[in-house]
Amino acid sequence: MKQAVNFHNVLVLLGVVVTTVGLIYFAVEFMDVISDWGRVLSLVLLGVLFVALGVHYEQGGDATEVVEHSGWRWLRVTNALYVLGAVATFGAVIAFLAIDDLDRIWKVLGTLALGLALILVAARRFGPHTRAPPL
Amino acid sequence: MAVRPLIVAAIAAALLLVTLATDVAVTRTAKLEVDDAGTWKTIIVDPSEEPFGRAYPSLVPIRADDNGTLGMRLRLDNEYPWAWSEDYVVLSNGREIARGTIDVPARTEGSVTFAVPVARLMETSYPYAPEPVSKDSKFANPSIELVLGGRYLYGSIALEVSE
Picture (cartoon, rainbow over the protein chains, first blue to last red):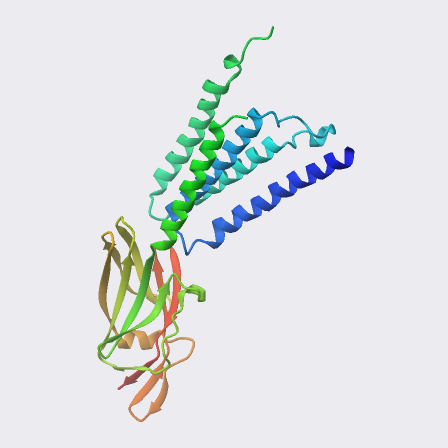
């Protein structure tokens, strides 16, 4: 049983690492084939894809901890997908900042507005006050 | 298991495929060309698999007069459904020879032509000074840099200049 859990963790961790490398390779090596805006949009869509899959597994009950060791308790299938979503979103922001056609003031305003909007949406829709009170 | 997140993931995947396919199918190409007795010789092309966009035209030198000018043309081919505007600077071994902004409407080709004094190109043929090839002509290989929207591209011209 313990071996199976370890193997599961290794697979999940490898999946995160390999997919992250793939995302970085996509963002860097296809600059001459796809446009700047296409690269931003692709990374955003990849982020949405990963997060949606994470939500799917979370709602399906696969979010339980698989490792009891304190340093590895974060390692769940759902968290792995959320981490990949964060990596893709981070890449999309970097790609957005690298667009030559856009004035840098719009880049700064767009990035700050998006970051704040994400935090406010998280606070309003998924904050502690939205949870059911303890019994 | 919940179906809605799966639908969102499927839509994102489909949009991703459409975005990539569309983006790969349409391109934007920039070329810097030199007038060689009425035909345009490409010396820089972007995007390119060659480093820094070098186009490696034939080594047959372009003949020019020492007191004349050499025609150059920056040509942008825009297949995208939106306009393309770029600032450009053309330098010869670090010295500016042309500067401006080129605007290309959607799905069209635009170009800007300018003339460069040959004597100025000969001045900037560092590190190799113009080599005499006959009693009244000399050969030079000035380097050309094109700065297009923040990208640095490089090429060179083989010139045979009659004095």
